[in-house]
Image 1 (cartoon, helix red, strand yellow):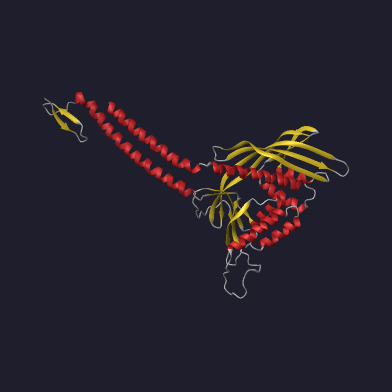
Image 2 (cartoon, rainbow over the protein chains, first blue to last red):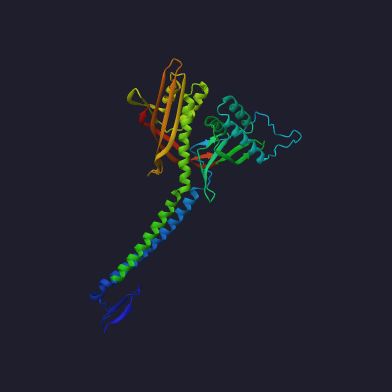
Length: 201
Length: 197
């Protein structure tokens, strides 16, 4: 009669009357049980690593689309402050540095200028006159202009190549069409436009 | 033996599932929805229309020299480096190819008193498709009507069909200290496919 003993991994090992494991009969089974346990541990470890990497990748891909202050810029456009011209909108009786601006009024005026420039494309002198008038609303001719071509339901935006306000107004003059609405206007302390975001109509 | 096989299959199955989830997380960030794709298609087509207007301005003898030069600069910016424009004629079967800047300069210098160039029927013949390197490539075809007239009676008119390769790529730039991603549309070579009167 063989007696039964449990090994560490709870496999049943039979022993003969001399307490020797019956290796001839169950040797391959024990070895395979041991290998299976080893394999189980490897699989558990691999699964854990994959879960962690999947989580990291998901975080990385969501972070990829977010705005960041990346110092390794491929291109850089900087606003040049306009310190040389007189600000016509400053209230002379108000001696404070910051000027209150009516964004809605600015947007409406700007939109009128853009339409006027596009509609006077056949008259270069008139178009240039409108461009010069509109330019006075901006901090500089290099003020960045972003154009949104598509806005997703989650609020993410797709942009055309950014340009400057002078280039954009010349584009309106050349093409004779205004395809965009004003989406966002940012102004500086002097009430001049420092950044413009447009959106496809 | 059978139990071990089943357990092995189970673990392999779990591994395969996890690998596919992790690759899926990466792939999702590159997906473009149909609406976004349509916006990109429209953007690229608009650049071709912009070019047609620039060519019309450059060729127009009424355009001032300074304006023509400014417009040539803007038109050149639409192209990928080393792009070429095909030029054909009814008088010869040969098609000449010039670098775009050279083409614009020759266009401005044409010896007519009046030049009229119109592009029409601008449409995709090959939709923008994503390449392995992430760029989108497509082909747009245009019909160009050219009319050149001189006071001394020199007249030339033709219609050419041209194919334009378009490249679209997502790029990044810095605006006011923040990173903005945008779709960069570049026009490639413009090849003549048909010439008729």
